Length: 98
Image 1: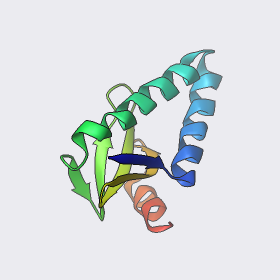
Image 2 (image 1 turned 180 degrees about the horizontal axis):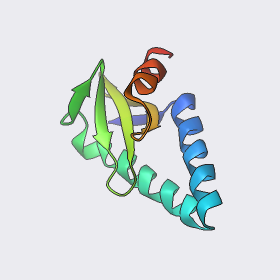
Image 3 (image 1 turned 45 degrees about the horizontal axis):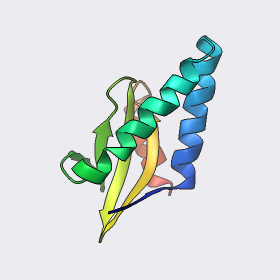
């Protein structure tokens, strides 16, 4: 399967990187490595996760983040990577603004 990470998801990853890097040097890089590993696992496990709205939601193994993606034909499209600690209304709003 093809795997694409859309621009909004890339921006979410960079925001997370910035946040964690400010906490302690090196944690931002660990955040990115972890999330990219989670995203890469979709090549094997896409479509098995719980549904949220029109997306599947993969919960990260190491950070409180969720990867929202869709499976379209033979392509996995990662739409957003959002912090689960945010207000659920905010998350829903982010998923509506494609």
